[in-house]
Length: 175
Image 1 (cartoon, rainbow, N blue to C red):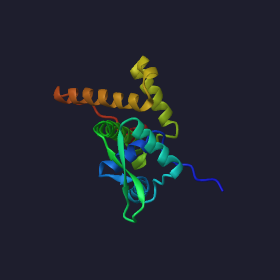
Image 2: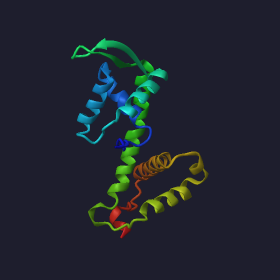
Image 3: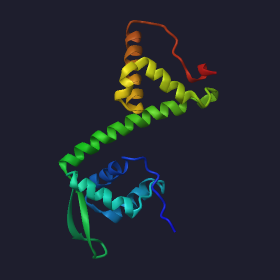
Image 4: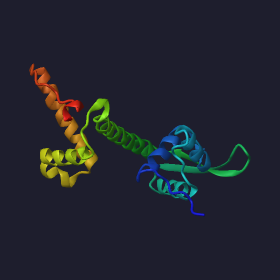
């Protein structure tokens, strides 16, 4: 029987491990258990993914480890966050929060009766490409989208300060 492959997007396991370890020294099995509990069963990390990720994080200097006895008396490697690991956690968490916020905005576009159609994401990518120009090749879609949102917010805030009364486009305007 084949083991289930993790459904986590690439690059997220390290962030999740760093977050759990930031709460205090913990061994590998407890990390997997806490991820499962905190996500209400959504994030299940197989051992074949967890322990190689822990080794990578330790080799990069983001985690430090010491052998100690567990609650059951067995010896286990307890991981703790290093200063470098804490900085990495803050940087990655901020990036994922921004991306999640942007994706949330996109997903909410079709709520409330708007019928923008299935091609709305392709249209957004094309519009962002037109607006941002050559920057597209140097950035990921999420960076491009977030850059566009921040530029738009700055423009809208500037218009508000100047007293502009332009009507804002709402999701239901896509009908």
